[in-house]
Length: 350
Ligand code: CLF
Ligand code: SF4
Image (cartoon, rainbow, N blue to C red; front, side, top):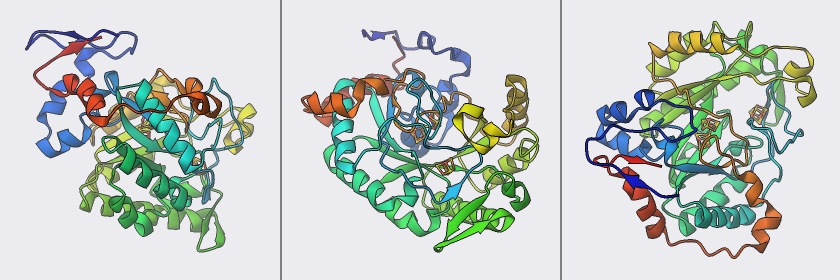
């Protein structure tokens, strides 16, 4: 792919095929943010809409277990063509994950972010998650580390997150009312007990809110994901958006529920529908008055690889990686490839 460098001051041009108009792509908004936040997000494809044209992320699926049950989740179901959270073809050991990251980094120089997002909850598998982060910090120190969690164990593991240099955290917050939560979470596992209904949801909500505050205090930009479930939490999410903004979250991502009977989830088999595009747009617009909204999410698999919307996970199966010569580009080389789009005076077009 040839990078065409345009003259200084020329209008920005969106990447072909990404379906995102330049006027909404955030270069201007990015330049208005405080310098330290800009540095944290400018090469993160999820936190910066502009960056998702130029930077890639990958997930390593090292976290199989979960400590709660959501009515929209069934991690047993796998389809190579399906892009949705929790879907994964292979669970990796930390060593396999490191090898995979180095192989991908050598093949995709735009790789800037390594995330752990499942297929279960990364913080319900702390040892596997943190061993992976530690090894990658040593072997690919330029990669930003990112994590997506249900938040149940966030307060207890916050120090470990900071020690391991995790710079971006997403919490899935679907409600701030336990009665709404009881319709989404049948149970949680807490202190070796299974706690059901609103009682369990109340503990989860409290932990999520505590975790959000602690992350903000530590200067970590927090993104909130919320699954929009019509008739269950859609109206309530306006309140959620106000709440998380007041607590200092950086970005809110309202994701449509994906529920089909063939996925075997509770919502799928009971016929719970997802929101229409119009319902989603109206809700996002209503919440946008309260905080910055993410509108370019691709609801990635837990083993996604590449630019958002151009998933290349099938090229990097365990079998393929075993046969690859894993000889990562030195970090400086990768950074040099990326630096051209980091320079805010240069506008580039693919
Ligand atoms: Fe992955 Fe999530 Fe980090 Fe991004 S995804 S852990 S913040 S590196 Fe991004 Fe994918 Fe949407 Fe997630 S497009 S599902 S928001
Ligand atoms: Fe599934 Fe994530 Fe919910 Fe756990 S927290 S049940 S992995 S969606």
